[in-house]
Length: 202
Image (cartoon, rainbow, N blue to C red):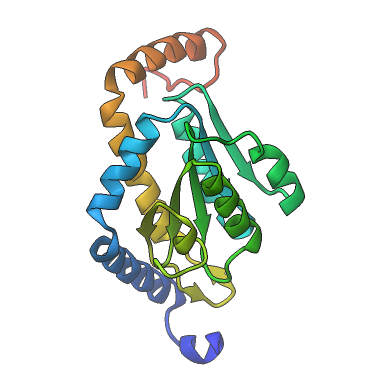
């Protein structure tokens, strides 16, 4: 089916145009009320758990990387079997926020994890393709992002854009704390030569 759709088209142009359309539709779909409520929930959480399995694991890791700069108690749960996932989230409670990702074909492990977390009183933020998806029905706040399959690849461009928006919105509320964190990190990075420095003469 994918080959029939692609035909003799310029694949690069086709995929980019398809992703642009997903971004446009996502901008129209995302509830601003759910988005603002999600930001508020994360800011008020004791712990933040981020769940992403299979193809959504990169989204979970990307979000976790940046959220970790802002909060001390961030747990990324990705790349685990269902049994291992429950071992990671068994301590979730009503003071915590859980951000979960799920797109077709929906991971049953993610859905079950979200259902468990919600049963403990935790606030569950679902990033999925629609409110009626298994994860959407198991979430307190739903952020919809389009992720249609192109050939064998799940396009994560639109979900990643929603993740970027979450990071920026949360960072804007944590500006002073982030400034102190990055001042310290810059000194450490410089002292231990973490990053390459450009030649001043270039």
